[in-house]
Length: 305
Length: 178
Figure 1 (cartoon, rainbow over the protein chains, first blue to last red):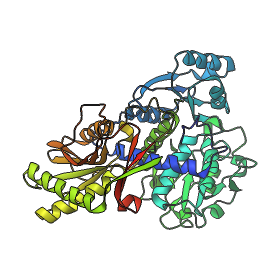
Figure 2: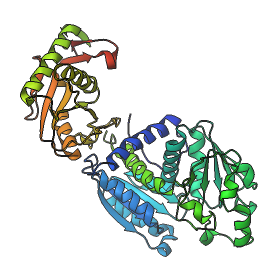
Figure 3: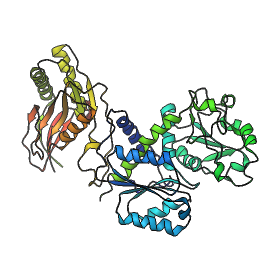
Figure 4: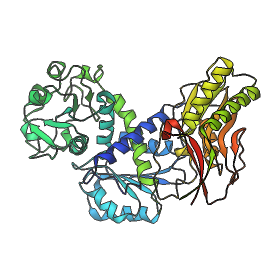
């Protein structure tokens, strides 16, 4: 098999590609269980993290993943304001291009920027989140975490709850999870649901989404992104859509609970659930590292013609 | 590829492994603390068989681990294909014990080099032995095996095919030509 060219979203992906990547991630997790968590696989490769939007945890996760594989890492954090201008984005990338790096992990506030970067740059591009559009490594780590609990995703019902409209996490999961056979439901108040979401059934009825769900994924309420009027009030949201112990009674008995973080405790999720036995939040962080190691391996090894 | 010769029959493989098991026990002065690590793919069933033979001769079965060397290959930055990363599972402490690395064929020595690096990343073995079913020569690194089933002089155009029941459904070693 050859290398993956870029990881931008899951358009055009085949199930076997996703499965092979998740299988590599499982092998990478073994490396993370060792006393000495480092392998020489990506020695000589240089990975840039290019973040035009702040995100501590995703950036650290990618950098750790690259270092565990012995890649060199350089970090670039663009000021949010200068970035809104398309030209400065391009200039930044062309500067990086001149340094002839092997992979670029790009986080951008505007949809499509990673795709654009993939056209400008010669190395591999990983989309680490672009606007509302996609966050493929998050979906991969979610799938990985779900597979831990459910073993297979074929025929499993996954409920995604909350601010679906603004969520690239929801969008990427709605692409990836059905590819692996899962049935995805997305629930939220009408103002926070997109008009359509390929791969998912949309509903304003939270109970319907939770009914018999094998797993529940709670999204962060992105208050900083919310348009005026999208949400009547926070109190109303909590009353209608907060995932609580009582509401989870409709889901399968041990249905795992995922959250991409950072979490607004007692807003989208009842605080006690976050630390409860269903919570896979810490598991997701570890899965994220293994998945990102696998992504870098799939992008970089086998690239030389 | 063209078939050239049958090099080892099933009973010869069996006898070679029995001899290697005896040699391991002799060199290690018993099976105490000993552990075996099979290198993917065919090193794994060979390590399992050696563990079974050592148990038969000494009454203790050494633990067996599985090692994949993919992440330790020295050509990952220059190859055009992507090798699949396979499982590494060594569920016992490597540190302080004699470990026998087991592989089917010793050729350039690059796999053994990678396996040594991988092994010492997992701990600090008291010492490391290397056992192979076939040594076909053409070393590119200063590596040698401590235990060899059969020394087989080959040309670079020749291919040594090891077939084992566990991985191939049949048993034997053959010489082919490209």
